[in-house]
Image (tube, rainbow, N blue to C red; front, side):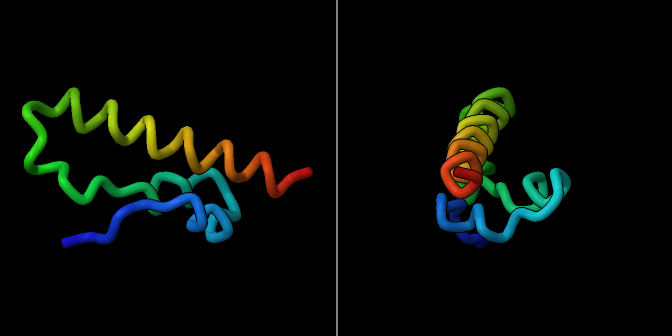
Length: 57
């Protein structure tokens, strides 16, 4: 099972493609349908991007 995505993982992002590789939904296979998994991925990505903006300042 893959590990969850946390805000502290934002330090691992150097280029935009890293965001796609880091964000993983640990429970993707248990979601009711694929659209809910995609929605969850967007939420994880948004959290990481907000954390990156904090580091930028």
